Image 1 (tube, one colour):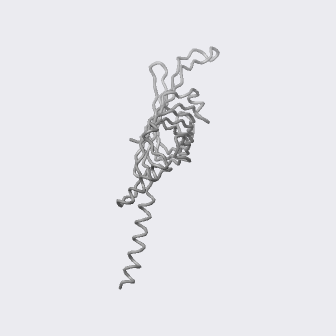
Image 2 (cartoon, rainbow, N blue to C red):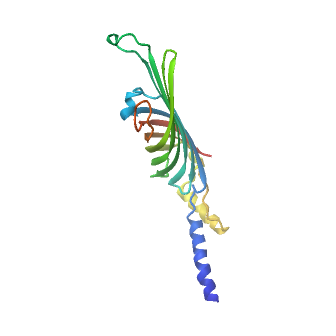
Length: 229
């Protein structure tokens, strides 16, 4: 009977101990981000709205299971506009034509950081749903269409931490903190709070067909702020 108890309890004890020891400073932390998002239409979408889309924004929520990995959700809005488009004189008189296309995208994301220092390069993969609304207007006549599709969005970027260095534990201080915590039965390192800026490059590919363009895509740059409260 004693041997059976040991055989059952020992693996459970080791598993619980491993899970406790593996808890890093970022475990169970939450990150929040907000970024200005500039995009350029790609592929056949350029024939619909060839101009840069300067009206874009991203909002981000992340959960950190480890120091280097975060999973979360993004909500982003990107707007494109073309106009006025006036035909050449040899085509006869024609009223100016305006065209607007706006995307609302909802993505689940996974981000991996290659470093946990003050400068943190990362790669991110996102996927989800995108809803696009398009409008074409000529004088008092207008035509609207609303379509939805899937969106896939890889990106690369860097997080630059601007936290006060006095509030960030050095490696030696963190090790000392952990040693003291072990004496009272706790193995969690102090959680990290930070504030910084992010710079990233992103390409979004969708299954949306709008304005005569198929499988719409757009590429761009983002500049934002990011914080762990």
